[in-house]
Length: 102
Image (cartoon, rainbow, N blue to C red; front, side, top):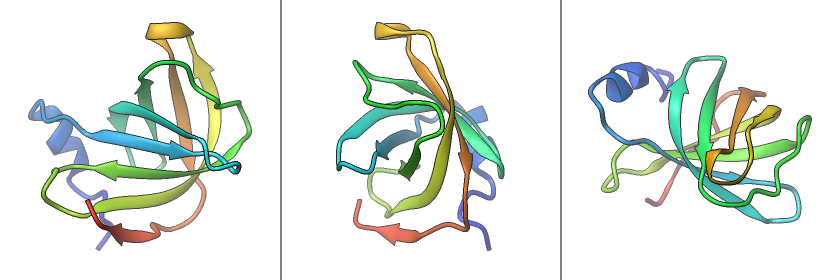
């Protein structure tokens, strides 16, 4: 079963979903998921971000701090805003990469 199944319910219940986005050089951007689907996600970024449209990235999602994270390969579709109001839209590239420690 897809690890993202039911994730919209998680967001609809007001639960926070944390995201870590890793670019090719190992730099990691952090943020909170605002919208999530089987096709991608909209992530509000925390602070300055090294992300650029078209970049291939690895995304880790945490639905519960006591549970393993969910990993997906993705591509940055677009960057929204800048500074404290920055966000990005990602499109999933391939099937989930599995779980890793929390």
